[in-house]
Amino acid sequence: MKKIKKYLKKHLTKDRYHHTLNVANIAIAMAMRYNPNLNNSDFVKRAEIAGLLHDCAKCMDNDKKLHICEKNKLPCNNFELSHPYLLHGKVGAYIAKTKFGIHDEEILQAITWHTTGRPNMSLLEKIIFIADYIEPNRNPIPELDLIRQLAFIDIDKAMEKILSNTLKFLESKGNPIDKMTQITYDSYVRPTVISSYKTTALNR
Image 1: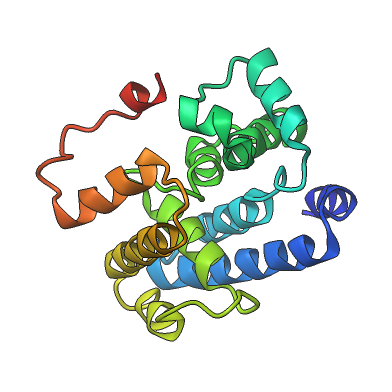
Image 2: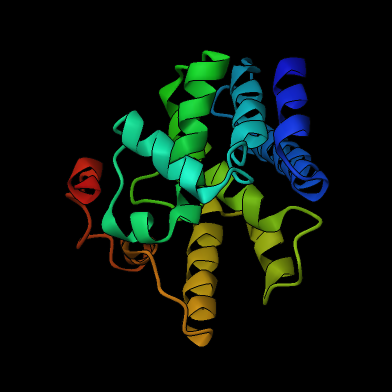
C-alpha cells in the first residue's frame, strides 16, 4: 500500500489524492458489509487496492492516455477515442498490472469500468463504482443522501439510481453519453434485453 500511495501522491493533484483515499475507505466499508466470506479478509483488502488505484491515471495528459492505449493495444471504442478523459479507467488498470504487478482480474475490471459501469458487474466492480460516487467530499448531487443509504442496504438499487442520475445529468447539460453507461442502466431496468451481453462485443 505504501508503494501505491507514494505513486498516487506524485501523479495526482492534492484534491484527487484525497478523493482516492476517500473512495478506498468507502470501498473498505462496503466490502465489510457485503463480504461473501466473513472469515476471509482478502475481499476487503482487494476492495482497498481497487479503490486506491481506480483514478491512478486520472490526472494523466489525454495525449499520453491515447498513446498508452495505442502502444499497448488496449481496446477503445470510438467514443472513448474522441473523449479520452474516459480512458483513465483502462489506462489505470494497465498501470495497476504493469507497475504494481496486480493480476487479479476483478480488481483490474473494477478499475477499468468504474466510470461508465457495464452489465453483469462483479460485486467488487459495483463497490468501486458506487464508492466513487458517494465518497464524502463529492459535490452535492441530487438524491446523494438516499444513494449513500442505499449503498449499504441494496447495492443494485444504488447502482440503478446512480446510473439514472448520471444519464439525467448528462442529458440536462447536453453532454454526449457513452453508450456503455446507457447499456449498463438498461441492464438494470430491462435485464432480459441485456442477458446475453458480452463485454468483448462492445469493445470493437
